[in-house]
Image (cartoon, rainbow, N blue to C red; front, top):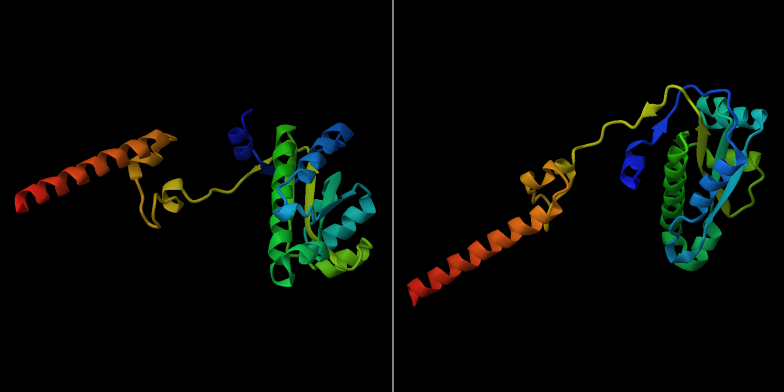
Length: 211
């Protein structure tokens, strides 16, 4: 499966199979998260693997999503905001930390999908409450919960806006409609070259006329 196909095959879940995630597979998922891009190479994330049923139920209560309790394994992504603050200052530490955690989560979901795992990304919960429950020290916060499972009924990603609705060429709002009928990026360059040549020819004729 190509990287492009894997991105399209990321799925979520409503129900989980009664199947434990092998350590070897989980290890690859965690390694993918560890190797995410890090602004300034600060390495501001830590990962807490949760497999205890009682703790999964507690996390489900905090996040407000019962699917966490159905999964055999969840990962709490912890951001070290003190570390990023020392590197980027207080104003930019939040952006840097959340950027790294988002990259880490996407990496983990991609590798999970390669191993037929569906995943659930949760954020926006009370970070202080979960941090206290998990004994996370001051200066660090749980910024996301990522749950994994095997399921017979994976939920596909929701539809996105079409590429021709969100992608512009050379300037905001400038769309080349014919180009987005596929991945013919060479076509963009060719159209640009042709129009540029025609424009130069037009101005050359105008110059000759007025001379």
